[in-house]
Image (tube, rainbow, N blue to C red; front, side):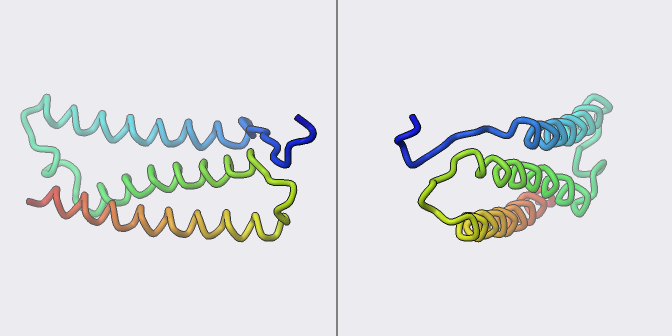
Length: 112
């Protein structure tokens, strides 16, 4: 394996807190939706559109941050650390931008 130009080291200690946070956020949101349904209320009446968008965005941001931290798991020895960091930062910006768009679309759908 030492001859290969790629090394893989998964930083579980760095990604596990983000995975746990994402799961907690998702469960809390699902619990609120289920409680409103069980009470015979519509979730759109229980969770304001802006709050839903904020919660979904936070879940997606957790995913983006976890993926960015995971990106360090696979490193090409021929790629300079500054270049690798720039590529990782670009990936995170693109994922955040996509998350913003997705949450806006989801929140808009909720009001229909």
